[in-house]
Amino acid sequence: MAVTDARNPLLGESTCGSLLQKLQEIWDEVGESDEERDKMLLQLEQDCLDVYKKKVELAAKSRAQLLQALSDAKLELSTLLSALGEKSFIGIPEKTSGTIKEQLAAIAPALEQLWKQKEERVKDFSDVQSQIQKICGEIAGNLNLNDQTGTPAVDEADLSLKKLDEYHAQLQELQKEKSERLHKVLEFVSTVHDLCAVLGMDFFSTVTEVHPSLNDSTSVQSKSISNDTLSRLAKTVLALKDDKKQRLHKLQELATQLIDLWNLMDTPIEERRLFDHVTCNISASVDEVTVPGALALDLIEQAEVEVERLDQLKASRMKEIAFKRQAELEEIFARAHIEIDPEAAREKIMALIDSGNVEPTELLTDMDNQIANAKEESLSRKDILDKVEKWMSACEEESWLDDYNRDENRYNASRGAHLNLKRAEKARILVNKIPALVDTLVAKTRAWEEDRGISFTYDGVPLLAMLDEYAMLRHEREDEKRRMRDQKKYTEQQNTEQETIFGSRPSPARPVGTKKVVGPRANGGANGTPSRRLSLNAHQNGSRSAVKDGKRDNTRPVAPVNYVAISKDDDASHVSGSDPVPASP
Image (cartoon, rainbow, N blue to C red; front, side, top):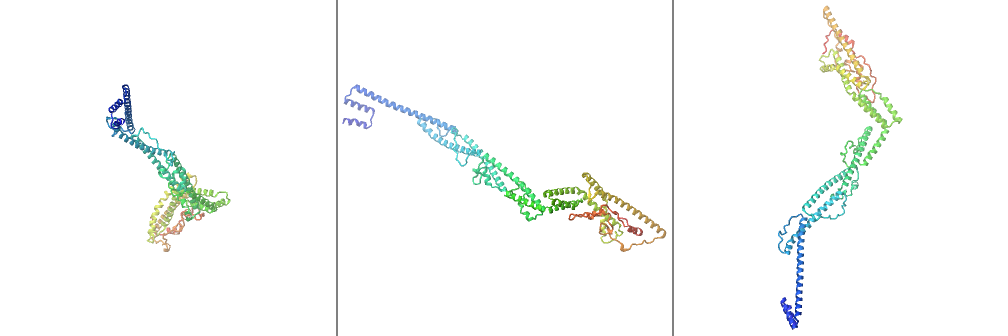
């Protein structure tokens, strides 16, 4: 019962005093000595001190840990603020008063919020740097688009918004450069597509040789934009443009040959239309040819085959073609009034073709050169020939005017008289210009002969000789006119004297049926009178016509004959008659 009573106090609320009292009671009951009691009390006191000491040590250690935690929290807070580029944070208390735990409790929410902000900032930096790394890899061309690149390392010591803005600015520059490069790539690809279409080439194989990502199945953002790709695309475009230029030049040469051969052999329009797709680009520039397949190799080969076929056909029709060129040459000479021997030329062509010593192309080239030279010669003579035509027309009017002036009935009120009168007025104006026209012709002809060192001939007759002969005959004609006027005056004077002596007597009148009316001239003369000059008449009526069938009438007299052909019978009848002779208007 004593033991049970001693334990009961331990079951309740105990204190050191109650326990010590209980211990005294036990000692008293046991009969412990004072020494034992003092020894046990000292031991109890030492045990209590040890317990307190341990508790104090634990408390001090806990305080130190709290202080270290508070210091670490403050350091981490400062580090986070520095890394985030923040000078202050709203959640951090300005004064650090209170217990350690209170201070820790005050810092903890701000620290947690800064950690979240840091994680978000690190994510932002990682995203931006990943995009920068990707674009740089695309530009450098060392990035495989099918592989996922690793996350770039983020420098957590500097997570400021300023640094993030710098990365964003760098990213925008790279995105702009990527956009420009992608635009260039797409332009190059489009150009390659158009060129391949015109040249009849496979676009897919051509563009994938540059880079596999350039085909149509790849998205736009996945196409290669590297320097190497751009360089190879530029080289491809240049090569295709050069190929296009060469093919167009080749096709234009073939088209020119086709047209020349067609014109040479009078190929019908229906057959020519089969090659409109070849000849339509004969004068086009490189940039103007955009029709797909316009410069395909099979089209060029088709044109080459046709040219070869026509060349073979041309060889078999060589004589016909050569004679056609000869006829063209003769026509040019005829228009230029240059005499040639067409029969000899045709015989020479026949001999060359039959001998086989000359290539057909060489013969045609030589004839083309002759035609070109003939055209040049004709052009150099054109100014003089135009004036020769004017001169001959003026001579025709002069001849008509002479016949008109000899007609005594020209003033009668006959049918068409007023028309002849008007023509006579115009003819006199034209005739008065003949001397100046002849002088101009002589000057131009002499200048032409001095420049070329040869004589200027008109249908085989030297033009200067014709002009000199005309001047001489015109002078003789003027002398004849003066002689006739003097004779007329003498006759009138004799008639006047006879009338004075014997009285007036009527002059024998000419029969009415012999009167003539000036009308259209035949063979260059009026009233059936012969031509004034056969050489000029031949020029005016015969030689001015075009040469037909490559032949010219060479029977024209070279020298003029009977320039002034005045019928003496007519003159005698005019003089012997006493009818008044009106003066020329």
